[in-house]
Image (cartoon, rainbow, N blue to C red):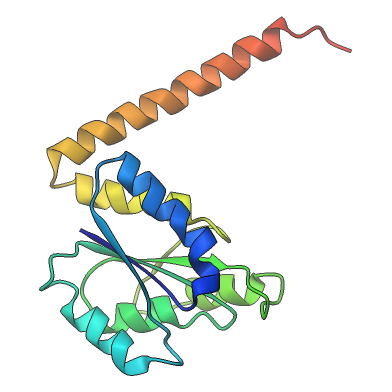
Length: 163
């Protein structure tokens, strides 16, 4: 239901976080290496066939110049979530953030934080959850668990004496 793509295998450690949270939330996903610069034909085929293959959302991670999310968004009507990846050829990740964030009018890409694949997975699940009640229920449970974690932290802080 959700496509997870990245420009290089070196991005997998970051992008795996999207797959992990999608699995936790009961959302099917696929993962592949699709480079905007090294395999442009594959990128075009992937983006153009995604909807027909049943995908609802695409999460695209990229470092450096980070063209993959925007180029994919230009080729499909599916929502695309861009994950800027801090890579070895990156300028502290800022080049990736700005490349994905600064899309031209008419070609939106939802952009999460640098290396923020987990949030990309949650956002993708929220998009899927607008039409899938089972996913919506899992998201409600997930949000309740977040609330409970914060309440636990607050109790722990209250129990700790001030220095």
